[in-house]
Image (cartoon, rainbow, N blue to C red; front, side, top):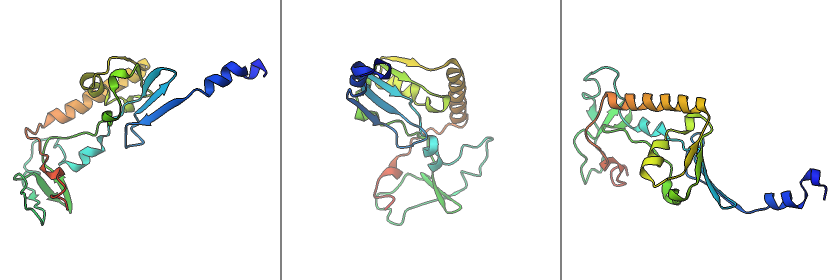
Length: 181
């Protein structure tokens, strides 16, 4: 085989087995795990922020507009929700509680075995604090300096937004299947 076209060494390299799995359900916020030749990499670690659309908006200024919304009670409310847990506005139902974000599905793999995380852009690094602080990840993180600076700004803005109007209670009864049947 012609060495300029790769030869047997390059052909064996490309035919080595690898495994790739996706830890995200949102294609615009990817998080992939790649196992190849004894190296395990995470490619991006996006945080799905669309989940906050289920919650009452956080007001920019203090207002009673959201607190005066009608409480929604499911028709089959056998168990009973916490008072004011769900609010209705314009035919939509919102959770009145602390915001929750959808992190990557980290239970599919042991993140302590990941050698490195490669971040491609600032939009797909919001789950990085969660992964580095709460999952046992001990590897290195690689990204360009502009990605780091923009991602840091994006994270700081998100934290500022969430902390601006804190909600002390975590409401999770609404997640029970019997509530939304």
